[in-house]
Length: 150
Image 1 (cartoon, one colour):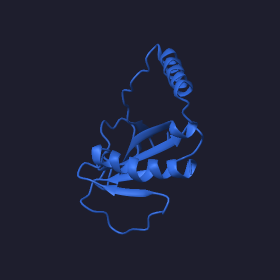
Image 2: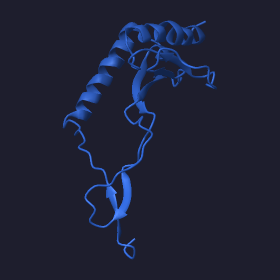
Image 3: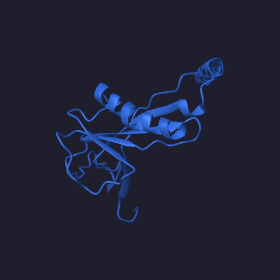
């Protein structure tokens, strides 16, 4: 790289700092959940962690190589770096992983080769909303609940 007068350029971002009392808050929340579980005798299969993750269709690299001293480096993309979809992942406290729910920002989804273990939904925003949450409860949560408690 030195011989050819090239350099790596990194895209930098500002990240959010974790709160100073994070461990205390985590312990407080865990204690609250465990207290309620004992108080109401909840099985572990009724406690879950659900998370929504936005995923981009195009993930351009944050590292480029160009001549040393260049102030701006252009990269080619597909034009879809701002187009996202949402993946909803759920893990139960008993160790069970529920099927992922993928929400696309389309009017309808084409019949592609999707895995049968993945549930595909579409809406105008591509986010989890009230309708998607109701669908998740009725078609994913209750299906799991029937399997774990016949």
